[in-house]
Image (cartoon, rainbow, N blue to C red; front, side):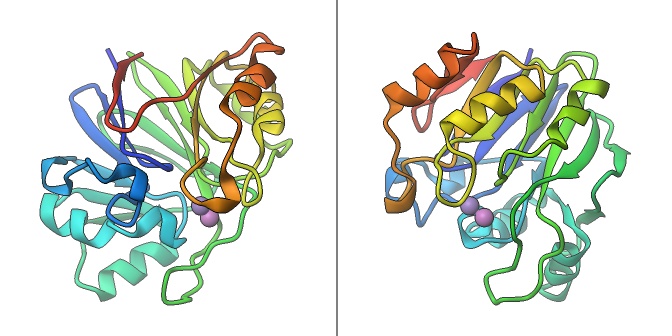
Length: 227
Ligand code: NI
Ligand code: MN
């Protein structure tokens, strides 16, 4: 059983195979996530797709508070180490590591990457997770890219997190196309509605996916679902 809790923007907590895995913590600056209390979040791992502010705003706080292992680019790992956060695991695109609760592959994301102080952040990334219970893809911020087809060659995804907000990432139409590339019919939308550039029409977005026979799930902030 895999549980997914939404904390707004691209931040999710996935509980699978006894591990609590947090993605791209951006909660306290998010007006839409006001009811989420950082102190209520516990996690064993924090996976970071890239270093933009809307993905790492609460990273240092949560890493220090939870002691979770932080996974990201080599550049993120070095940046955190200099800040005294040393429970980190650097990866780079194409690498696979067995974290015990799942084997995780870091995959390409077509996006830029810098840290909030303008330090170079390495290549932006997504992650594919595989264990006995589930297989899923967290895309991070990305454009539609043919590289996504490689994921479908090697994995049978149960579900995937895709950005749908447009302007900085794919829009819903491209994300629906991406669902075809990765051969996955259950998509959890992310990176939409948080701020002005990425406001979406939910009905139209859902329709883009439905037209392709794909279910788009738009979670309420604070909601937990079982996949
Ligand atoms: Ni970004
Ligand atoms: Mn972003």
